[in-house]
Image: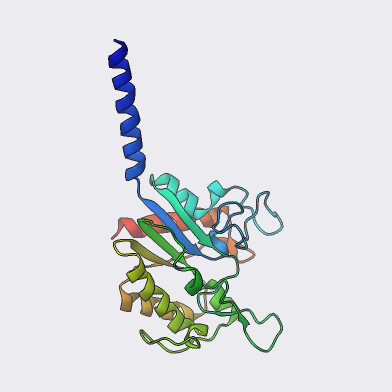
Length: 233
């Protein structure tokens, strides 16, 4: 009887471990929309959503209310790496901050952080919002031969990022999440480059926001719209 009990416990433990290991993992390359204090890597990345919450900015008070935590929890996935940085642009040109030239954001841009996502099964890239808000240079569509200067403009940096990530993460499902309410040339550029490089683009619609950032309601809407998109594939 004792041996049978031990064998049963061992089999249960093995089944649990195998199930946990088989769960798909998710990484996020994002900006403030995907941050939450204590849940970004590296932890020196700036965040918008704090614990405890800065309630003058948002009604999001728990990591469980973020879009990505809801998505991972509801669908039985695991979090691999959340490399999100508040205020970050895809290209290397950031906010002018009342100066005549764009700030050099190459220390935090998406093209700088794109290699640091672990070994996930799924990657969500959620960006472009700060490129739009900062008025970063658009540049030309360019799909190879990028120069250092090219990466200070949105279109070539976006193309460089997606091209590199498709090669850097083979057999990983990569999706770009496109925020609503961005200036038209950013949105159209994202869709054009995603189509060219065959990266699915999830276009958000009608997201509820406070101070330009998803509220609790908006976070739930993002999760729902991602799930609806994936269900329709």
